Image (cartoon, rainbow, N blue to C red; front, side, top):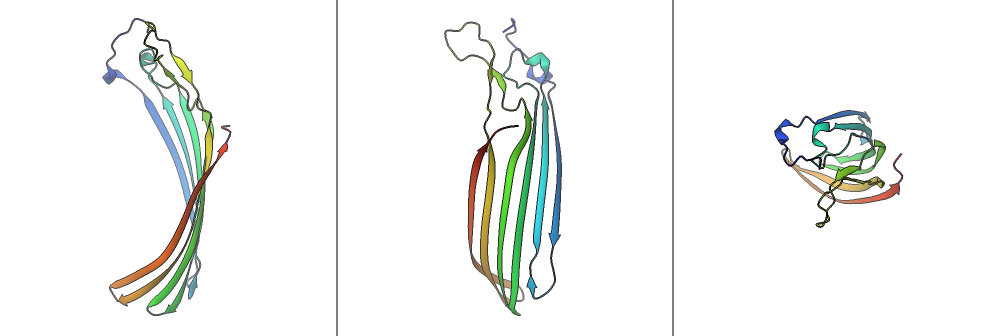
Length: 168
């Protein structure tokens, strides 16, 4: 392509910037029945800038920007039955979705046909996104056998699923 047959990859000047913000809010009370509720959110932005001098002879992606938002709610409750036994139960629900995406999933590649002596770049577009969910519940019993030994027994159920959504 363009007469270039070799390229020194040590000379590449590609850059990627990631920007992440997150926050956690936790509320609890110090009584015999504890019911802390937690909210978590994370926002991530990725921006990739390829080396323009190398795009003519590699499979480098064009400029790409993508956002991602993750939110989670969880709650736990515990009840102190006696000095050695505590019953616990809880839940968690989280969702993660892509946000704005600019040229995300588009890349250039050379034609793979063997009979083609002059491969030309082709655009590949991936326009499928998913809204991913995770939910779980648990219950456990905690026994303090000694001051330094604790035994836990319980059950937990988690479920994951996703829904297709358009990329905005």
